[in-house]
Image 1: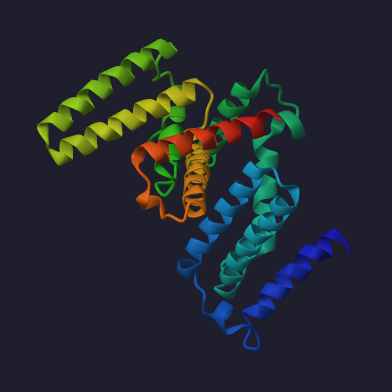
Image 2: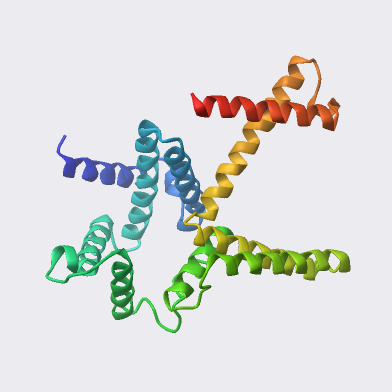
Amino acid sequence: MNRGSALERLVNIMARLRSEEGCPWDRKQTRETLKPYLIEEAYELLEAIEKNDPHQIKEELGDLLFQIIFHCQIARERGEFDVWDVLESITEKMLNRHPHVFGDDRIKDASQVIQRWEEHKKREGKLKDSVLEGIPAALPSLLRAHRVQERASRVGFDWNKREEVYEKLKEELREFEAALESGNRDEIESEMGDLLFSLVNISRFSGINPEDALRRTTDKFIKRFRFIEEEARKQGKHISELTLSEMDNLWEEAKLLNEKKHNQ
């Protein structure tokens, strides 16, 4: 099948699904009702990428693309734009923002690419009153904190050395402990936020995405916890019937098994 016609076929399928002769569920959807599916498909793609599973990545990219086509069809029905307008818009944007690739501009390194990108966004009116504008408020909190810190860093508002960030983390930990002692819930929440923000700073200075790091650790915790549950079932017990010491021993066993798999 011609690659261009494959996209057109998908667009036509979406139009049919939304037509009077189409699917009642698809016809019922709006931009608002589709928001959870858009987010869900994006996270399923992230999971596939982390598993490094090409077949699953391909499938999840298709699901995410379908959501984009869905939104384009809704916009077309409202007389706003269609998928071809979207493709033309992003194509022109990429050409304009990469004059070092598609023009005569010259750059030294990736940091200069970011600088030129910001300059183009300013000319396009995308950055107005603050360098922090344009960071979506709906981003996961860790990722949003990371993006905010990156933007502030670009204009020089940053720590000079990693050691300074460590000291700030220690300071925030002491303040959090003091808040716990006070018992004031608002103060505890505020200091916890400061503590997490400092941890994000350490992640950034270490070249680690905190959202990815926490997701991997959570997945690791789930695997080890499920191992404990399975071992409890083998003993004819529910996990709640195990002592804390028994659960700790099984946890260490799960760690050892994971290390063996990793080293094989």
